[in-house]
Length: 104
Picture 1 (cartoon, rainbow, N blue to C red):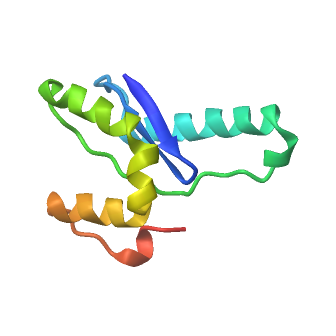
Picture 2 (cartoon, one colour):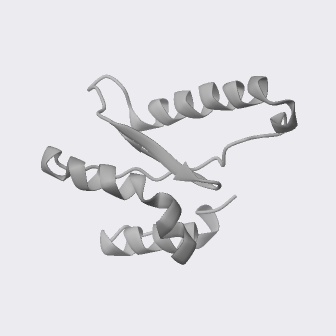
């Protein structure tokens, strides 16, 4: 439905077929986009995604809100850092995490 982000992370709003796991989806997105970036610009030959990711699910009735959220990433991150945003989501949804595993 929408892809967007800023210099250090992206957000993807999509549906997920039953037969595809989140980890397989992200592996494919990271692999294909990394190859594309490297082919497109020689200055990006050392580009790589971080090893981790965060995935959240929501209902169809929340899709428009999510699309707006993704479209406003550049302005949002002028005021709030990515790390702070992710911690806020994890805390809001009571996801336990260990800080040492969040960042590469």
